Length: 323
Length: 248
Image (cartoon, rainbow over all chains, first blue to last red; front, side, top):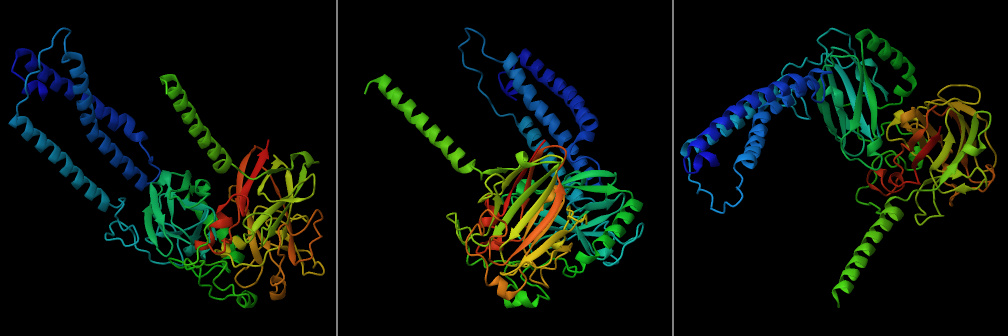
């Protein structure tokens, strides 16, 4: 802009043209590289439909940002290379005057980019794999998500979405499978190419369930059922981390999940259901959230010791003892 | 003051501040409890480790905090620490003397014993004997504790990354829970010296072939007086959480 705004001269007109041509060529090359070479390797990968959707979004943002970054760097480099002060030249630079065409172009271009991103972001939010598609504690959209026909049974290739409850506690995640007798385990196993609904909650402080390679991330709040969906598309291992600072062992609050074939998952689920029957019988009935201060059938000795809602429940927040 | 004197003063003051910062970082932030080293007492691929839970920690400036203690393998004395070192690829035979009273688990799932085996070879189980204040009860193998229905669990010893979870059994009666040990550690060199009601929990597990540091913790939110029970001893190294260093 400075070149065009300064006193007209033959050399400056050439600068503007060269800048434009160079920027166009570099931008096209850069956008192609970002979209075709870097894009498939963008995080979080493509191990699920949600992860793939996020990868596409990040690639799109990268493609849009590429000409902007190239334009800034090109102009910066051009100015340093050709417009720097010559030795012995102590004259002032030419005064800058307004340029209506450039101002109009600038406002139009930036407005178009921002509005396009707003439209794109909104569409992606509502899309089936988007963050707003029936997810969160109070979803306003419910597009593309199969209805939960049964909370007590599940079989593959039906319209009944698989439900998995994620329970955060200091400092581990446990997973409950209500459609397989409600067993709870430290292992997170999913069937491939199957829609999964995560119901995320916490027994104590705020945690965050982040299945990185699946592109699933949902806060685990006590007393709240936070919903997230995904459909794994590849078998293999994925990482689960807590992504909310939750205490001294927050950094160690991670484990690994497994996506396996549908038949493998069914075998695992039925075997685990049988193995954990004894501990499942001790668990509270499956619910979207749990209040640890409420123990439905507390033992007689516990009751006589006044432990109904003490040790295993919330301590009185009005009486915090500080170190 | 001359310029060299002013420069020297400024440099000395700067170094003093830096030294103070380093001291605070090392002394307070970087400090950790002592490590009980069991590597030298391992033999025939096995090592015996003894821990203790206490309702009070009277040897510290937090006397009302619950805590773990670990027996020093050389002196036999219980030391206020939760750090211990064991060899890799070794069978660790653990004895936990549980001197605290029962507490319902926040999540009953942690009432399941995992990652262990007993002396008789039973997998995912622990051997439990209760001392009622006068005599020891029979040793029974337990694989699942229902801490809500029974006064049965006081704490847990869990190494999540190894899939190890051991509920520490508690004295089961009201009378026993009202006669708990009031000092910590509760016994001296001999495991059976304490006369307060307590449990004796024994189990074994195998350390990984590769070395590493494995954190362990209690899954009972036993920080009484703190919000959610997870502050105080639950959030302070050396009380209800620690590290097991596996030396390859």
